[in-house]
Image 1 (cartoon, rainbow, N blue to C red):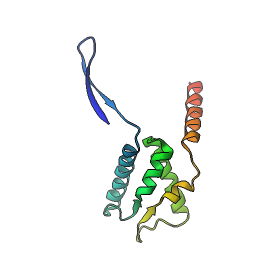
Image 2: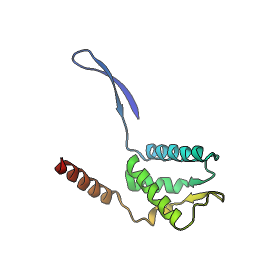
Image 3: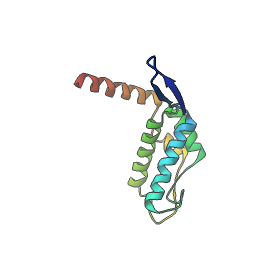
Length: 126
């Protein structure tokens, strides 16, 4: 992520924010969301949910570093974890593993196809 100051032809100054779709940025976004979850619950970080380094790597690989898609993957993992009783509020932390992510069977190509369909649908509905 980079912030760059720009000036228009009229001399108006503005800041331009560049977001990079990298696995490390997607990891930061996920970690901030998990930190917020723990803060909201009044629990220490990593006490309810933890993500293994291998899971972060796999999420980065299949999402191409897209932070929105990375959060979507985490949502699906949580939904499956809750549905199977793996996330327990008063127990040991639920550890998201590479296997959890792989078991979803989601690929970046599927996400891109899906996103294009939604974008074209939204455009035609206007």
